[in-house]
Image 1: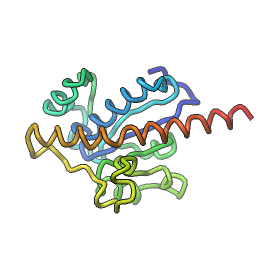
Image 2: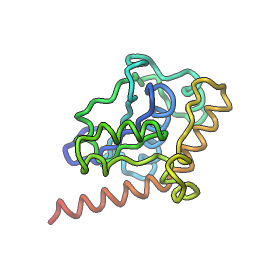
Image 3: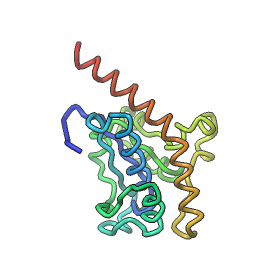
Image 4: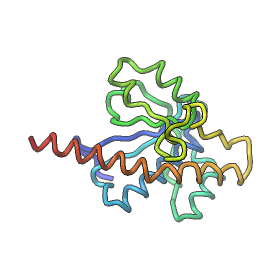
Length: 177
């Protein structure tokens, strides 16, 4: 993707940035491409810890993404950087622990307002407590756990894409005036 100063920037955040957040990043990027929004929106991912920094995506996550022709070979795990609070327009936590960590680290209310649970965009989960909106870490599990993560991300994508589309249109209108 080409980086532009007016791009709407989204980041997905999990623990180590090798399972959930890169899956969410790549699946969201693909959904945005299908909607023709890929030139207006940048998506990336990070982990709240540096445990896995520099490592590739978990092979089980890569396998699950490959089923839908999403390539993940380029992914390299990285740790969250405080500057991203200001540089991102939407910060998506994959689980309640990530949400809590990001909320505590947010430097001000504007940054805090950018943080959302990823599954809060799933219509079946939108009205549920944040504790129920989390996507459990599949790292300790097997292929079925990565399939479950894929499905949880997938069901949130239409609502998330609609939200982003709305934000991008609103930002475009503001820039025109």
